[in-house]
Length: 345
View 1 (cartoon, rainbow, N blue to C red):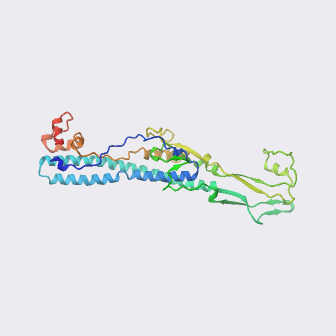
View 2 (tube, one colour):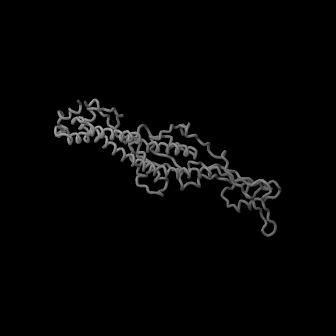
View 3 (spheres, helix red, strand yellow):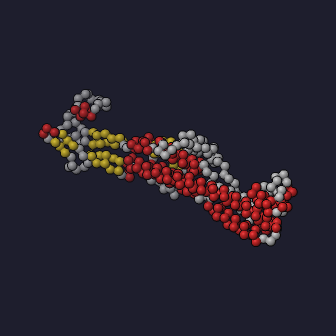
């Protein structure tokens, strides 16, 4: 009779906490704001999927719980009713565990996504700063001051053009960063823009003007002078000064820090750098902690295949059957294979 009650479920067990495969090298290959924006976008999507990974199983188990409970109440056969009560108890226990896991993973996901979005705003600012370019303004906008305050005032212009930055990457089609495959499930460490190093994204520049004759100090450059000494060593005035600003782009990676999330690529244990990090911690360590807390979660719900061999050792089912009928009062005894054999019939 039990065969008529069996519903085949998707077999599953609680995931182990081991990381599958090697570390995600793409995360440590990040070298500019476009790489980082791409990875953060994909990371958020990955976390959102984790947050919803229990939903379909929970819905199915709620339906099964209702089905088994109603069927048990309607059954007129004692053995059948006991078995249905047992299946309901098994389903309820796994449902409660999955709901607990879902609540925990969603809280962790909300916290991590909130911190990622803060980092995205920082990266956007960093990308703008990296594109900044200062030049001498074109046109007749500059000032000469004769008399006692004689001198010149050069007006500077600051622009930020897309061509001076990196090329945005499409998260829908991009699967690599600097030749490394993106594998967020294997994330161990990640390079991120460091809020404390934001100024390092600014370009270096120098102002140059051509003197009307040789400067004092000989033919070779003297790079260790003050600004005043450098100006005073030269004479300007023959109409060929042509002042200009030369810009050297920053090395973006100098504005980044590596955040260690897990101890290694084999076990998902929070790295000591981030394990106790609080909000406001330097070098994005708090974000690292939140990423650890969400990514170390099991992402596969608990679900037992309903079959005689699979359920014959299930504690919740055996206890429910034992409580249902005195004939099965010893069925929860793991040494009593005779009683438990009834479940396999």
